[in-house]
Image (tube, rainbow, N blue to C red):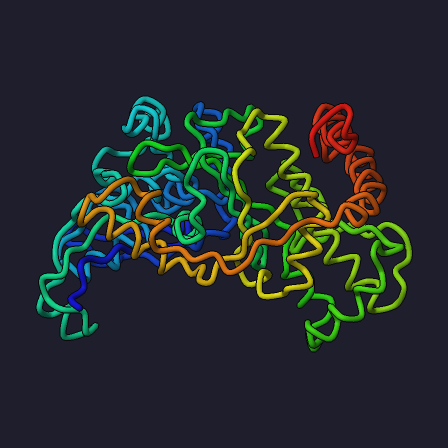
Length: 418
């Protein structure tokens, strides 16, 4: 079967500078590079709601280091240049963290001018799924992809994984558990967040894709137990539900979602019952963080009435999947395939054929392996430790009183849905 098209995803916020022909002239600054904190402050002072590691602060840093006359390039733009032979416009998904306004579908020129950003630095922007060109004969020789294959504008790796999960109908959510935890959902309207920890991507059909990235995640397991057998540790951890210790297992200092706390550090309350008890506390702590993310989304008015899907490396653990469903008190779907590549295949199929909405195309390609139901007795057992953690986060000044109160209220079935 011939290849009908391809789209490229990349890490959100990874940028570099190129000359006008697309040749790189700077190193790429990765999505988690934190060198541009001063530039992030400048951008926020100019009225742009950016986080420290977003692409725009790094673009300002690169501009200062390398000077004007160059072109900003997002990670996939460089790959597409090699495939088609021409520097492409950026897709709006990757341009979001460079300051692109998805509402007006334009660069915020007044704010960027205040920051000294020259017009020629920024690429044109198109919606994901837009035709960008075809694979050249030279690229075909290098990659094995047939010459003439359509190349379409992609999305960030997080959005690609969301497409692969099928979570594109309003109210549906995808929880991606890898080194860190990322939640991405779908809504008819953008979800407004005055704190800026939640941001909204936009699908090519106009559906809004709110999401946020925590610094809690599976990376904490490797940090504490670098040589452990995860399956064996999961089996031992099942004896500690709940663990005597309660954890907020940050992978690195500072939290980004569901609250912003640059000074936050990993937290373990109480004394775990040996290694198995600590492993259990870490697994449960990720589940508590996940629940707090959903409570925060509910606090903001985000729709949560659709299905929840678990993906990411952490979803390979059947025990952890069931544990998370129990802590959240809601069913969770586990798809067969969740790689971002599947999401880009669906986006390319949508862009090349325009056969229905992106959600329609994704649902035809995504296969759900199983649906996990929460066990009410376990959900009730985890309510106390979760409340203890919420109080601890509030006492440290990391979590606002309003969000803490909302989270605690939702624990009680008579006053808020869990």
